[in-house]
Amino acid sequence: MGHRVIGVDVSRAKVEMMASGRSPIIEARMSELIAEAKQARRLHATTDATEAVLNSEVSFVCVGTPSLKNGKLDLSHIEHVAKEIGAAIRQKKSPHVFVLRSTVLPGTTENVALPILEKESGKQNGRDFTVCYNPEFMREGSAVADFLQPPYTILGARDSVHLAPLRELYKGPPGTLYETTIPIAEMVKYYSNCYHALKVGFANEMGTMCKHLGVDAQAVTKIFTSDTKLNVSAAYLSPGFAFGGSCLPKDLRAITYKAKELDLKLPLLESLMPSNAEHVDRAVEMVMSTGKKKIAQLGLSFKAGTDDLRESPQVQLIKRLMGEGLEVRVWDEDVSLGRLAGSNRQYIEEVIPHIGSVLSADLEAVLRGAEVVILGNKSANRELLARYLRPEQIVIDLVHLDPARRPQGAKTYDGICW
Ligand SMILES: NC(=O)c1ccc[n+]([C@@H]2O[C@H](COP(=O)([O-])OP(=O)(O)OC[C@H]3O[C@@H](n4cnc5c(N)ncnc54)[C@H](O)[C@@H]3O)[C@@H](O)[C@H]2O)c1
Image (spheres, rainbow, N blue to C red):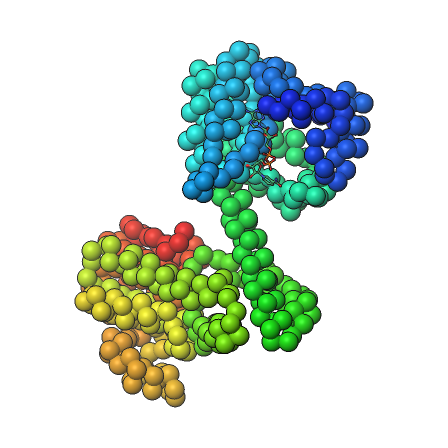
């Protein structure tokens, strides 16, 4: 892109290779790019961080963040670099931008690197230098291509004015440029990598299942991934409440039972029902931790717009809260007994009569006297809620109700996993 770059590493061998125009790693297109840049005198390499900082405007820090034996992130390289760069900034007359690119847990940039930089430089973030976080999404083997065609670029800073130099630097590559906080930028990287690991594990376990059932796994995957509406999409990726309903739990059980019959270990698939149950436990704990006794739950079916109560985690939650001795009242327009017919009515009357007896379609009556209001599915309507909800009532949102539909005025409004 025409910038002048000084590469810094503690490894003399890497620096020497780079300085002589050779790539210290095997990576597609890297040898040509380094040779070209060296030829054009745009690339230099040194082991001296101070020299590099004094002769540049921006430092991109991409030192390793390996695991310690216990799995904890080893931040020693980052601490070391922050010290060196901080000390160099102390000598600098012009402002400097410190951009962390290494993968670090949320809070690391601001709570580990920044204090070291301020201490060592004797200067202040936002005044004399700036600190930004810019996660990288390149894959080894196609790093250059990924850099030139990124899915997006994420820039995190305390104040968006700190990002001006980076905004300029990233004018070239396509994709959306997100400007956000440092912890969000740090977390997107972990969210992505954990998801990628999950996808690999999932595809491998499903492939194993296919193979043992005599089904062509690649053919199944090809059709599966062509669905960009529900399968390879943002669907089912919104932090919210446990899954339920007539299909997911039943089908998961069928496939994991079959795996047992086939003597297959599929720990990822087997972990999904326990993970879901844990999420219901989390909701119970959230309600219990309020210390309140009178609870209104809005929503009984597993999703709004249906009266299907089969394997509804909302029903499980109410049963658990009742079991803890809390006084629970339930509102669900779709399930209210008066409107219900057929198997769902029978289910309430025979299997969960205790819930049937506290179920009502009268929102005002359900909310009256409640200390905690649980938004159990997305059926709650903002205008109705606004009419009957009182500010002192604690609202627990299990479904991430669209902010435009949330009631205003509740002093405490808390989401289950956001
Ligand atoms: N490898 C990838 O594909 C990839 C992708 C995205 C993010 N990341 C993240 O980027 C970071 C770096 O990963 P990596 O695989 O390149 O690690 P790496 O260990 O291969 O490279 C890190 C380099 O930093 C050098 N170094 C260590 N301390 C230094 C110091 N004080 N001054 C100068 N140089 C120093 C090391 O000598 C080494 O050459 C990690 O946080 C990683 O999670 C890596």
